[in-house]
Length: 488
Image (tube, rainbow, N blue to C red):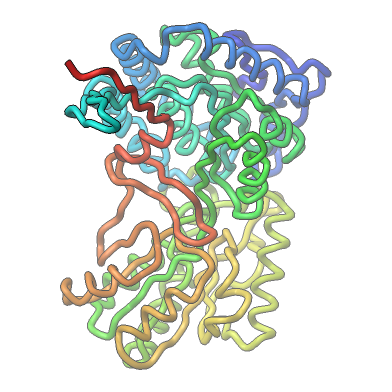
């Protein structure tokens, strides 16, 4: 077994937690311990934040765009050279299936081009023409500046993807970044720190990593620390709300990419071969452990029975198991308590009247690990717990609707979430009309998908505040300053 870096990375050095505590990192497929990680406490968070603050306040990192670009091109190349290591680690640490690796790793590294180019092409300053007020003609200059210190907090389901977004984007915009990883997946952050340390000229003080066994201790220490200017978080709405509330003390900025219960609307003229195939793939990908996945299928009555026949056949025969086997779309669930939560949601849905057509129980193929069979629930009430709650597992809920496209929109929008949505129709103009009415940050028509470095990604409702990606996502890491000078 390879040796994984599990120490903290603070001020350019790998070190153990001040307490000396470590905790085991468990492979969800077989419950083996793959490594130990440093169990940081508030004192370690304070060390990282102090170093980041000092760097942000005393270095010229924020203003030297050419040097930053050089460093982050080095980071991209270093990640590309070690992509195979990241992929093996993602499977061991998070149970990510080999079938998903291109999206989790390769696409993310390639997409770094967009932000690297923005470092030098972005209009950091803009001059406005003279404007007279109170007899004083003034010129104005709009200037974009980094916030300073970014507290980046990432989830376990896509630890490389989300870390690259926050770390790369935070550094590209001239900030210092303190990355807190999920307790379940600290090793990806450790490998990222190795690449920063060994393959780039990124100065010490610009990037730091923290890991801890407890979900909240280090996060609370970070959100209480007034030296952090911006919190960038991906995770659950409950934790996101807590971060926003704590960031309000001191009026710090927060960007939140939170959960989803995305609707996939099948209009009566949908191509059922494509719609059902895509619908299953976009629900079951990453073992259903994804915030933007299409977990509610909203199906018109005219095609409902035919859709169920197709879905039942597909999901009952969906390959699942060993995440290293590229044939498997569904791998392990991250840990036991998540598995128990999923069991409860499905069991209560069946008790409330949903019809179980496939799965609905733990996978018993292996003696060890956390497994749940790909599951299909039909006749789901749109207001039921299973329709309104993010399961975060391989569970597809099908909701029947009657009436026109406005009724489909109403059912799809019947959710506190609004991260993503999907529309299936043979008539693209009809699909666009529906897409424009859906309350979601991203909408996918037929066989399309929003994910790209240049398109902003954010949520409506409790699915988030602010965006990742695109020029809009770049600006989330920047303050705006207006400077006036006398017009001559």
